Length: 131
Image 1 (cartoon, rainbow, N blue to C red):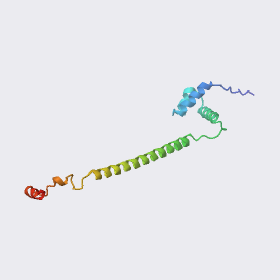
Image 2 (cartoon, one colour):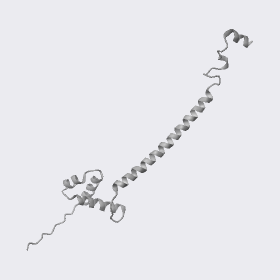
Image 3 (cartoon, rainbow, N blue to C red):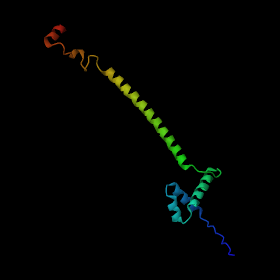
């Protein structure tokens, strides 16, 4: 009967684990990273889960990183839509104010003419009116 050889576990430095998890978070493919480091890819997921749990101070549980990112982006979109709405209201207000100011500055005689420049009365008739 042959003895089973006990598998030896390798210890990895904390810095290496942190760099590997940071690269995972930046979008490097996990399979490629695992091949590069010559480790099993499940170990990378384990390191990530463990580090996030330590940062959050919560017990180990399933991670929902894509869901968190979606909620973050939805909140950002809502904030931008609110800002856009406020800016649209400001523009509408200022356009209406400008129209009001232009209406007040426009002379009542139409087309910018004043009473002294009324051309509807011809030259000799104008002199007769003035006397």
